[in-house]
Length: 136
Image 1 (tube, rainbow, N blue to C red):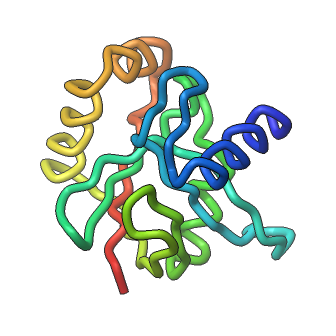
Image 2 (tube, helix red, strand yellow):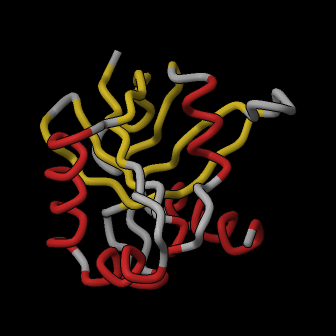
Image 3 (tube, rainbow, N blue to C red):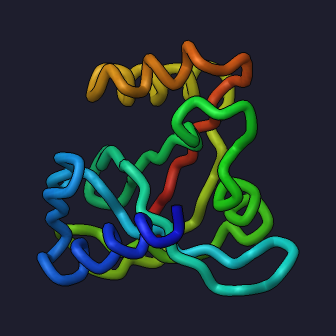
């Protein structure tokens, strides 16, 4: 997976945020995070929905796995981080996990964007977390 992620990261950076691999287009951000246990700096490409000029949503779907992705735990441990975006370049953000109705409404946006998210939901019994990334 890390080689595939690195390929996506390299394509994102080489093409100003456009990733043709797997048809991602300009729908990704590069999420910077610090390992909760290791303290190591990491970067993960993730699908994002831009809500407004200062807010993005990301879903910890992990393709429907029964566990959350490592980056989710890392962001909860270190919520002040940065992202690389197709339109704004590097942006410092604060991460907050959405709960209740706010989470449900945000998750519905992901499912409306791509049927893949609905299939992820069908594959797992966990509630897939949604995080709001707000510009600092």
